[in-house]
Image (cartoon, rainbow, N blue to C red; front, side, top):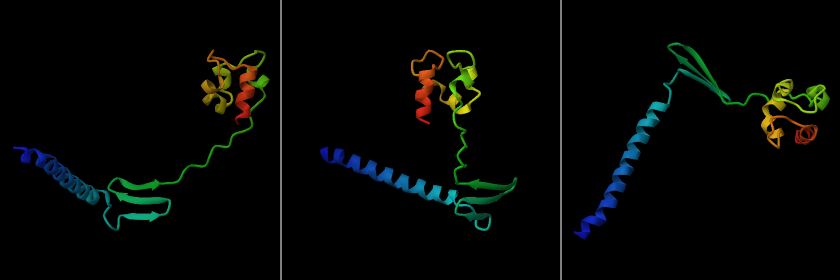
Length: 120
């Protein structure tokens, strides 16, 4: 009786291994495109499909060019704080508004803005 108990894990492991091999063999054959339908370069590949040509690029887009942060008074106007609506005038600040608003009161003070611009 105990001899059968010890065989169960080995049989289960062998079955899982065989299933994994079968899945890997099947996936490998499905992922490779048919020869002659692909043009590849180091950073892109072009596939011919029934719907037309598909190009896949593997490079990152160029980073956005950020202008230097405007002065606090330009964004705040005559107010002592920058609101989310005013921050929209400078997209990097609008994107980081929650981070720049360190005390989480929904507005950015001049000190908070100064701390945020030092990190830029």
